[in-house]
Length: 355
Ligand code: COI
Image 1 (spheres, rainbow, N blue to C red):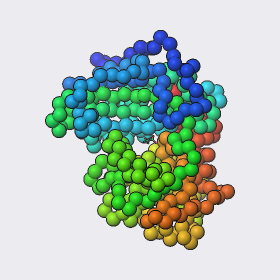
Image 2: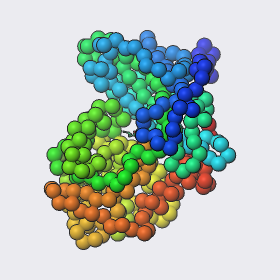
Image 3: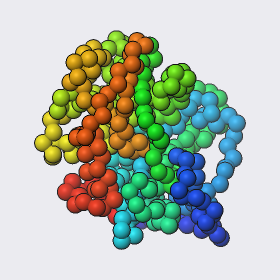
Image 4: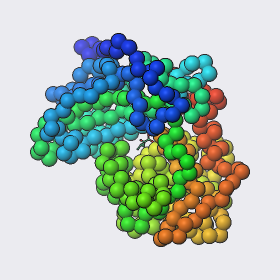
């Protein structure tokens, strides 16, 4: 502990909780927030003291750089409650690591480890009643950082705000997920910010996703910007393809997010003796495999979505339906992953952290 900078967090509790007004059975993803949030400001080259206080709006100058240049990054994490009322985080070190890589790419200051990790732990601990028991119930955690310095000159801000907000959540997608393979739009390009969890990566997807929604599809599988022949990510998730009994997923790159669920599923699959290949997956080979029946499954993987089976996809206006399987690898891996997250199975990887 630094002598003149003790690792202390101020906690200002709300006089009452709104928890009793929340219907936990009908939550729509990301729209209900807990009583408190964490706020920590960066000024004059250093981070100030983090504060946990009431969840509430705050004022920003209209010229704050986040509004004009989108200097903003975020993470997605979850907390889980087990049968003994213990609350668990899943691989928070990985989110911290990725958050600070995103910060570097967006010319933002890295958050000190203890502010992220200890801030997260204390906030979740304070809000533990909001984490409900039972598979599927989670507390979605959204750490983020925005540029709050004023002035519309196109240069990095000197002032930033790091925050963590919490939202009780069930599933991200309700119902079946069908996707369109992108022929024109891309999520990211080499040299760009695709590997960063930058806000703009997500808003850039809204328009093509809206076009897909209008055609009855929920998401897009993005193809590479240069050739549109390689399958990259699916909407808000990394994507896996099962051909016969091998799983294929695109390697992490400047265009592809290093997903925590993605790498956890790869480790779990390998432990189960399932062959996984991290290599470019081509549109042509997936179409061929869909036609000859060797394409068994396609699924997305992400914190919010967990493991999301894709029931079919469209490419060049032809729809390919995927088989309904009794032995879905996606569902087996989802089961193994969630059992670790909810402390229902031994965590031999050392991934879970008790709050
Ligand atoms: C997550 O899976 O947590 C994400 O950050 C994706 C988000 C757009 C919901």
